[in-house]
Length: 366
Image (cartoon, rainbow, N blue to C red):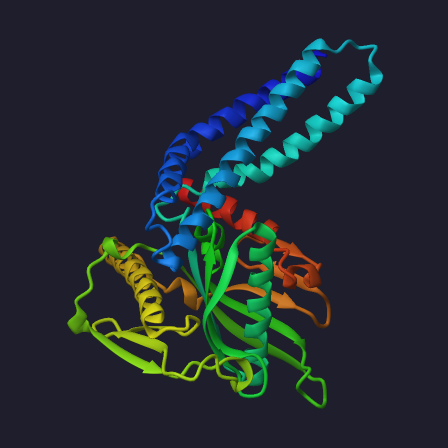
């Protein structure tokens, strides 16, 4: 059937081009290198590092297989289309369904082509801070935490809370989460900004309508070798880690807070059992923040030279979640909106994220 043959042929060409752009051959080389490392007798000497590498192996395998299997399915369907006559109605109906499904799947996979910036393939460090409003805002921060944890689960990312500060009565004051997975930072990077919630308060006896704010920050996880830090510029504090509700994570002063004195950037890690592990991950967080800080500083200087006004992106409201008097989630940058607030708050934010990636890719081209 000529119609289906042309449809599958177009998909085949697009998919082959995407595989070239994504450089799957380079990923295969990286995968081979990691698999060779696992054969070393000392591989499990550093268990944390070994587990990270095993996770990277699984993610690379999944990514390569997803694209290669998709291309194979298209090629198989293309051959069937070439051998099918107009009289074979049952096969024609199946080909029609396949072509429609493959086009939808390609649109989903195609989003990765928009993730071509330096750290898009890296893990992400996501932080949430409750805004003004006390318990209301702290509860909203915890709702956002759940949304991102559920999103990570749906996408196959591994999310691990590295530090958390519980709210006074409910919710959280702040939290930092490591989101591990291929393109974790790329998918999440435009979630950075102020998120606004409007709802009837569950903490108000009169059930009055309240507006709450929370700030979301996203940083790529960056190797420490990419940036140099002078030990003299660091202030390192240790304290006892505590979980939600004040329950102790452990009974030693294992939690670590590192302050970079020249910039005032502070990071905290408390999820690991040893002070050494917490310090190591806190340093990783600091490196990531400093790298972004330096890049933003350079961008600000360039804009100042060109005479443009500068505003910190994370200080701007990016999205509203309205639960009363109607249901609506609206992204104020892209214009994307949906009335299905319950699904969004349950982590169904892939459509929102795809719309962000397409919107900002278009903005950069203009």
